[in-house]
Image (cartoon, rainbow, N blue to C red; front, side, top):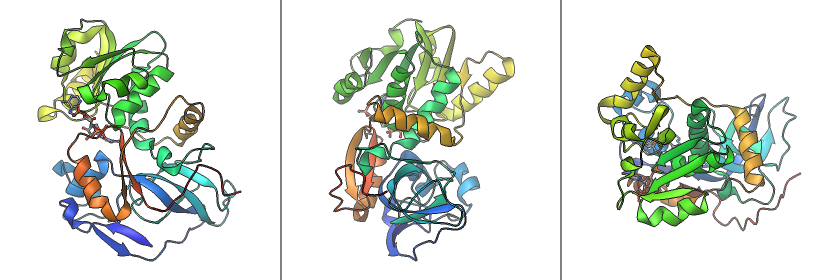
Length: 331
Ligand SMILES: NC(=O)c1ccc[n+]([C@@H]2O[C@H](COP(=O)([O-])OP(=O)(O)OC[C@H]3O[C@@H](n4cnc5c(N)ncnc54)[C@H](OP(=O)(O)O)[C@@H]3O)[C@@H](O)[C@H]2O)c1
């Protein structure tokens, strides 16, 4: 199989597309032929080992796992012993269990993991949305967001931001989205009740009317957003912030019991996929695809993701000549 291999930390120029043996599923696993995957900010951080401390998880001197890629959509090619949940030919989507392995033509993973049948009528490219949605869901769950809540999402145009916006509407909240001019119409299309252009308007001057503020792109701070929060409002950020302040403030908030700043760590929850699948099928959640690259051009995809300007996701078409019209070809 073709796989994108990185044996040393560094720039996307180090990525090497190689022929490797196709993995074989062990008991309880399925072999998936990957049709589509993404390059995410997480892949990009893992490739460069940035920030440095990620090496504690990924390998101190060189990457322990050499094929990146979290999101996948594809077809079940073979079943390991004892698997009854899937059949050969099923169209599935999900997240790799430990965040590695989807930048390849084939992938083995546990049948009981974060993998779900695709909703009917969808293309593979439209299903590689799990990581952003899963992160966004972690924040909204931590907020206990519900009907009637008012939330401001700063950076509502990225992978997490576009997911958070759609999921917040699904939860019945009133959403204010803060984005740049090219993304104003996107935020409206995704259901934002109010859209603020951060280049033209000071979003921090909207008053203390929000139950929650989510900095979905890690470019703001609690101190900047504090005037927006109601008395018992809560701030969360997707990044550590300058001098790791979001982590420090969240720790301080937890120790003092104010709960004013939170920094939840996402944990994979396979049941979230079933929820997401239903929402996609119901037309309440959709992929926002910025660009699509063939596997051979994955280094260019990384370079684009590194600009920190993508809207939604950057898709890698692993099977290029897909002619995929979203119909089930399997069982
Ligand atoms: N992707 C993931 O699943 C993931 C996982 C873990 C952690 N994270 C972290 O979470 C954060 C968000 O990740 P992401 O993948 O969602 O980001 P992303 O898709 O790369 O976000 C890019 C978007 O943010 C907007 N943006 C850039 N600068 C901005 C600013 N100053 N104010 C408001 N919007 C701005 C960009 O549009 P404009 O420049 O036109 O405004 C662009 O649409 C990152 O810090 C990342 O490291 C991401």
